[in-house]
Length: 569
Image: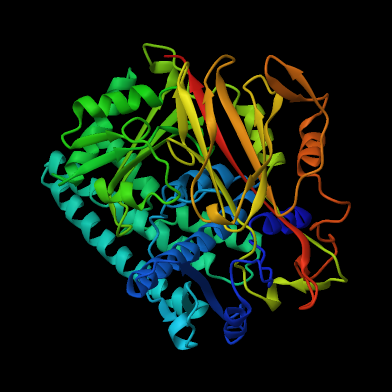
């Protein structure tokens, strides 16, 4: 388990490289040395907007998103490394509404908005005249933890007050009012979970097992006056005694629960696809779920997958059009299925409403498939091709640890489709548009794994030059044809050309030759023999080499991935 945690921490850590071609200049680095990483949580944002006031706003927003992502990804790593714990599935589902805003390469705005952060305009503070504006967002870790400990206490008091009101309604036999009051605690519980997540995610170097146990205890903690969210959900089920024999019944109950918490909304609600557990893959029921709410929900509903064409790197322009987001997930546990749906304000991060419906598959009139086709194979690909960052140094490297430098910068790559970064689904015959972005000139290599697990080299050594840096670049259009199911796209970016790898031509595809997943990732990455794998016995987490000031890296390499589900029309 120890080695797994070290390796995962490497995967979830963005390496900073102090080089002239990197995304953060040395003068910024020098200023950051005043903020030791074990004491401060911080990030730097950058903007090239010519209007300096707007540039500072953009850079600050970027830094805030990076801090939120850093907190979330640490907790994701903690939960993942405890996947053999008996409480793992319960914890994963319990905190899923908070953590759905994070996945390894998601670049949409995290809805997590942290309180209490300070901000500096480094460009102004250092009297710089560069075209870039740098914003520095920071806070002491203990200070942020204390803020959210107090916030959690306030939420618990309000939840307890609402529960007492609901019990009074029950004593008066006013079941309808009692249920409505219990339901109004649901978004409060989600906010409480977020506060619990933050307190763990801001820790500098938490013990994985101890942190996980804290999450498990918080998820199940209950008393006579303050029930756990799980206990309230069970009690609402007992009071309503809903009969669920079809998927339409499920959607109807979700509609009812949401409507009792939020009477009306101005503007449109973007409905994300129904996702299977934490896989980022749409369930086969995704189309039926969205279609139901387009017809039945009292608010104006936008199909996130079909009602816009996204060619941008950042989705801010889309979120301005419909800031309300409904994110549903589907969880299987033997015969029991749980559908969760969270309504959230993307701008403020506020949980507006939450719906939870549990039922038994054996009691349904129709047989339904919940798990995406090819699920197991794609999960193997996702795990094997987990994005890494790599630097090959031409000189003699100095070994650095997390303690000695900041977690920002270096070569970055993103990849997305016309429907976004993740939760992506298409139907047979659709055209898939693929876009990429890098923060410095680089060569791209893309590997595509089809639903039948064959791997094809989609593009190789696609060059993005200086004029296209930090801009969306169209890679090409691709047609959705059988075999259908969930497919996988892996992209690697490198600051020098990739070496050739062996492929064979077939029907216009360049398939990799006789390679399992592990061999394929080594071929596609084309790493030299040394890399970023820490020693199991190491007491200090080693995450990469740092070049000498006079020696620039020979190359940098960064990676990203996404999944696409192709369904029948």
